[in-house]
Image 1 (tube, rainbow, N blue to C red):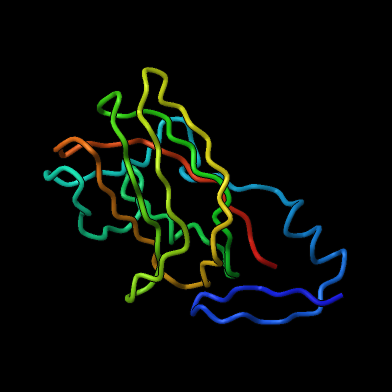
Image 2: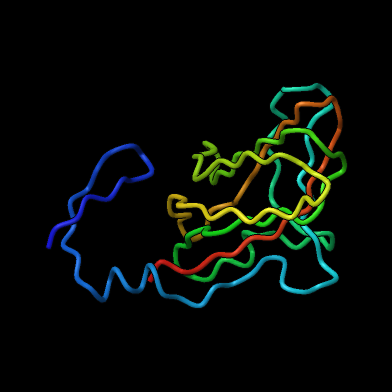
Length: 157
């Protein structure tokens, strides 16, 4: 069976796929970042409403970067969970990217209600091994505003 896969550069690649390859993508042991209950990732939006902030590396409250947790293979970001927000009843948008050129792998839009926890399954592009992972965000309300999140991810191999 042949399968078309979009590449990060926008081209489409035809690959031969078998059931084992497809199962490895859909059945895997998720990894979580940050790794412990006393660790958080806080995504901050800029002072201006509806304005993208500068790109910043994704890290936790201890300064541990998401990039440092990616094993020696490429990874898929598969779920983003919003745990808390600094303000209710506002819209947040985030982009996640890798590398010096900030190649976007996925985007997220959430509405911050009274119970902000939102789990979003994403079909992100591959994050190649050795790349730095960045984010940028914006909020419908002038800020800075923030969201705490955690990520679920798994290896490509």
